[in-house]
Image (spheres, rainbow, N blue to C red):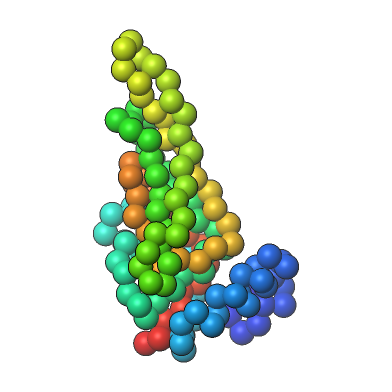
Length: 132
């Protein structure tokens, strides 16, 4: 797949592109690959002039024991949560319940920004549409 035409895309990716390319009046499409910390990344900041098309999005927590389950929130173009994902396993140590947060892997979706609880690392492979 490339930015000029999506002839090498899967049928699911073509449907995603057909349904998202008209959501904002974009004039720039930028292929993006990001792997790193979620904190401080551009994915946390809402901007009505940008939309991410994720061919693959993975969030990971690096510490095994967490004080609560991890959740990933994806926001739509109106900056409203439209998707939440969680992959945790609860277990007991003594009298306290603990959680191991496993990674969350999502494919072929769009979002304007993300927020997370207990996830600190992400991998994004996809595109950013911007009106600027």
